[in-house]
Image 1 (cartoon, rainbow, N blue to C red):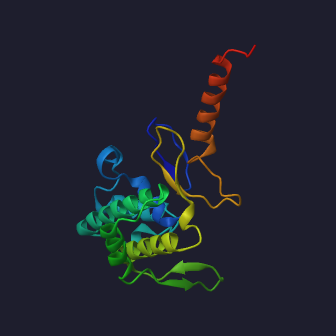
Image 2: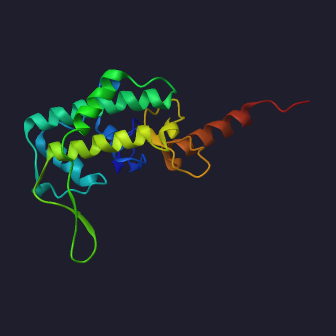
Length: 195
């Protein structure tokens, strides 16, 4: 999904899980300046752009749903940061995720041509439940110990490392990975040659 990092450049960032895609919409504290969820149409746009690919014309979203989406996002953010740094998951935020996950999720259905779709109409609480259930699956599943924060000193992006070796360090190689490689090369060139 398109991401607008701190330096203003755009690139494709795949955090590896639906629940982590929600984190690209802003957040509390220093992330508030990137807040993207202000009105129902903002939430509809995110639901269309994320991996759910919900048709915005078929999703009911109210003002209260936007506040709920932000509440879920902020809880997932704190849980993700704790997991990325090997800390205990914050109980209050885990309870918040579970509260959303307990609601009915989106209902999948099969189309006559054999592809997957969603049962319509749908509403924002169902979509948020689906996101919360994805978080439960992530933090209790096989990749729970592979949640990472980008290794760049100025990048707050979080992702799940699904690579085979499990050594991904950057949000995206074309952004932070390349910047860090250039920085390391400059540092090596500045060091005096031994002897």
